[in-house]
Length: 330
Image 1 (spheres, rainbow, N blue to C red):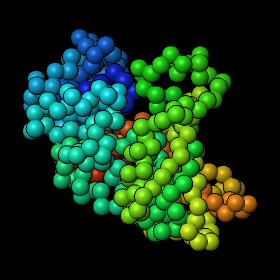
Image 2 (cartoon, one colour; image 1 turned 90 degrees about the vertical axis):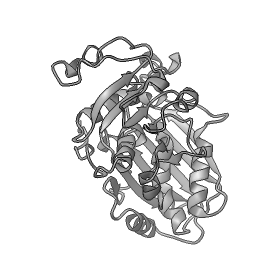
Image 3 (spheres, one colour; image 1 turned 45 degrees about the vertical axis):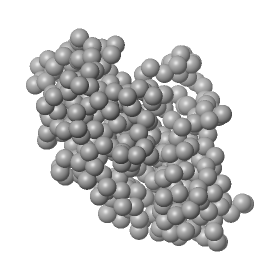
Image 4 (cartoon, one colour; image 1 turned 120 degrees about the horizontal axis):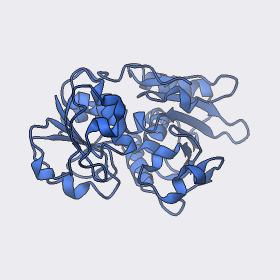
């Protein structure tokens, strides 16, 4: 399969490049960028020197000139992809890693493990990848809503992300000096992921869903931990919640449902560099609230690796192709 990547010099785009170069059926034939246009891949990424494709030049992104590409990954900032991707030739399939096409008519939402979503992705030519925070939170919550164990309204999602979640072009207050030895919440007035999560959860629950979402930046490069709180519809136990998740994800190659160990949740580091998601569940003894936890790599299941999973389905590859490697353990 002949693959193109737009936004190749960003965090998500460069992770896509790494995964595609290691993919058994993907050949990168086009790379697009703005600030990096004119450089070769090996100049931008020295590890590609001497490899086939390393001398590929990064091009300015002109949608009408995309030719001979079977599938295009677009990793552009939210607000920058809707207009240019509308001009990409119909023959080229697209996975938009950015936020412009989630729950937009004509585009399929690309979180594979949602009920019924796999076949929709397989039969689509336009996929909107999920946001990184929603990927972690939705995977944790979906089994509980699917079995009617929790109320779909009034869900609270408290999530922490590594700095790469803000993108390479993020504001100056997301730089190393500003984030090292620091922790802060952001997007408190409004966050675009709220609508995305509410629509996805409503589809699963079959009724209105509402979410209070607070994202935080923590001083690490990558990873997301989403801690989600929901009201149970009836008295329940952690074992029952775990059973629901295990049933929902029994045959899923990238989901790991984990019992809490000594009261501790999954670690983001368990997923680094992979498409894995680690999920755990608890019930707060004082309040009775259900606690659902999801840990992922924001550049993996939250972006590039999920995009490759979608591309595999769209192009008839084994779903796990290029994604079977182990995480990067510290």
